[in-house]
Length: 133
Image (cartoon, rainbow, N blue to C red):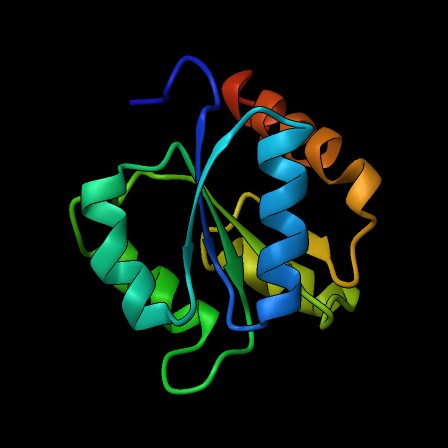
């Protein structure tokens, strides 16, 4: 079931600087409630209680990477929660692979903080309208 509006975002990202910038922008400019997890395992632990409308997920993380985290999410109570990958690895074939894994879209790092909210909202609107990425 799709949430009617985008309010709660879980950011699973191991880079502290990206965490800070993304949270600042998403909360202060976008008005979103943001929870941060610094690893895939922490994200899997936090997600059920936080109940995010959307998950922003780093691809390259130690121990449990983004694709592994997404696979684990799909086997749990938040199997239908939409996921957008954040990555510097965004060659066309990689983006196709991420979408094949079930990601809605990919936001390329480094992202522009001033357009992050609009990018997330655009992805959300395509998702809500059934248009995919």
